[in-house]
Amino acid sequence: RFNDDIAKVCGKQIIHLKDGRTPWDVYIDKRWIGNTRTAHCSTELKTVPVRNWLAENADPDDPLVLGMDMSELDRLERAQVNWDRPVISLINQYQVWRPSWQGMLDRHGIKSPRLYGMGYEHNNCGGFCCKAGLVQFERLLKTNPERYAYHEAEMVRAMDAIGPTAKPFL
Image 1 (cartoon, rainbow, N blue to C red):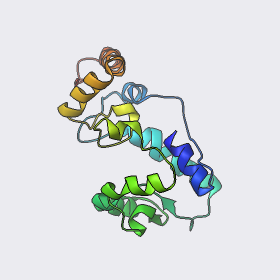
Image 2: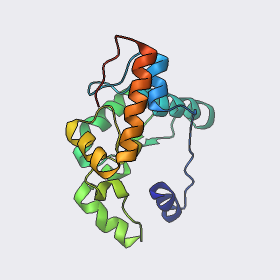
Image 3: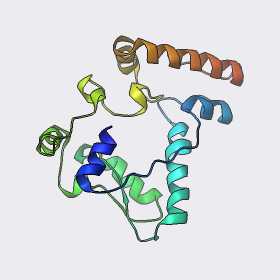
Image 4: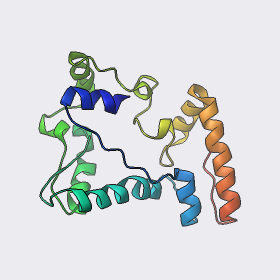
């Protein structure tokens, strides 16, 4: 919903890239469960499809625009090194910090993503992330027990498929 609202205000189309897998499917395919150090689900489900799409559909000089704010300069700098094209963050271009987002959204009649209002740091994967810590998993359990139960069952499925080298985190 949030992406659609942003696209409408900006007059731009958002292209949704999907390969049909979940993070848990990636863990099973790669034979290891993501963790606080690495999220190969992000690489497989975000980076690889975007790289492939850009290679087929974009000019090499077209920038990759990321939604990072001024508190994430380290992520932006890594992205600028790791992509074979210009990488920018329009948020950084305008020197925006998270606390000022709400005013910008309000001016355009855009409702903030619900996860932020529930205390989540990021609006990714419905509150689940293998890089999240215990506080976020507790928050997910309290705010969305059904989603937590889904991920708990998926973790069991992945551990069964991977075998004794799989390490749980829920």
